[in-house]
Amino acid sequence: MSEASMLDMNFDEVYDMEVIPEGEECQVSIIAAEVTGKKNAEDEKMLVVRFSVIDHDTAEDIYHYLSIPNAELKRTDAKKANKQMLRIREFYQAFDVDYSQPVELANLQGLIGWAIVGVQKPTAEYPQEKNFIKSFVLRG
Image (cartoon, rainbow, N blue to C red):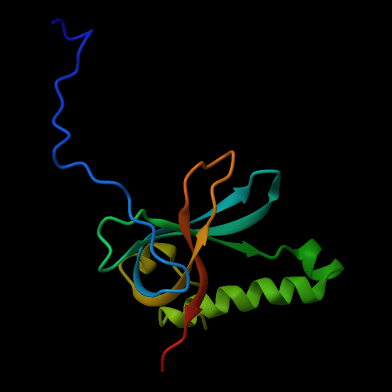
């Protein structure tokens, strides 16, 4: 057979991705963190953090999205802006990040903390169940 008609691949070691049960407390490690614009509002930013779940090698990485309040939101809806800041502070506290000065995102890689996971049901956009971070566990 020609290379164009058949791929010779071994599927013996392929596994289904694990979905961690709802409410489980898991130790997670930060793989990467970056600031990006929101899909429908480029002037609004979010911190996107990618986690691996320790002790669950077959689970998909979990992405967590934290909105960063802009000056407009702080002016028009101070409570919502404060709530967004609280969520970021909780994330930093869960990973023992010193936020008394600007945080260098590259320094977050490899940090380990604890989180409670949830299970997102299938949607049209993502047709399989997947895990998400419900909350971070503050230790100390």
